[in-house]
Length: 270
Image: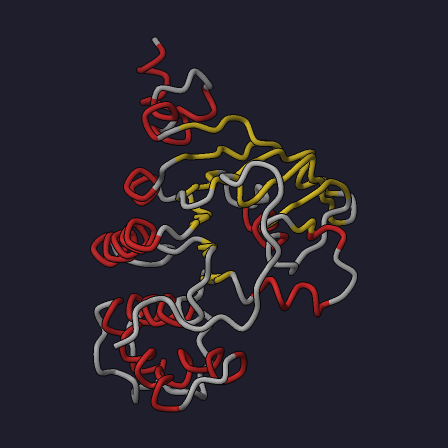
């Protein structure tokens, strides 16, 4: 039986500076035409923690995390991941080497419709490792068991509910045992019970395997359950960063309104 450690296809350079800081974002800016989305974001993410990035819809959360996997390029600023300054990368080869250490759970699951569940999870293993088919099948089965969907390798994505698709997508994200997983709105469109299941899996994955998790969300219930720290993105900058307790008692009106709603926030501050 395979655990979450599979043979890795490459070794990244050791991180420089504080070994506890796995990602460093410094003064990152991004505009689209005349719209300034990120206005100088500064954020440090610690190794092995779950950091939730909160913020209003359209406020730049997904733009920010897309930069961490090279899908969007900053206009200005610096991003360092595992000691590598990714904002200095010159081609896709450099990004591809780093992406094999990272997982990205897309908001819509983004499974390959023409592939079975087992083929979806095995895709990266077949393309980026020299494992035998027997070993790959064992890892696929183990990942599905871990997300509590044992034995559905032959089903097609269209046969699954939205929550099941999201769990299969998480199993696929786990395939290469990433050090970092980015979750883009992982509970959007899911009912509260299914959302709680996804939140439980995120927390368990971080707790059992010390994976660094970055969760983009506006779901307060999920945030309070999974977060070690919370960063509030507001008007293109990080307004504040803190533990769940610190954020719940934040003096910033914008934070209180986001967590409790405008009316309750006013009551708390009166």
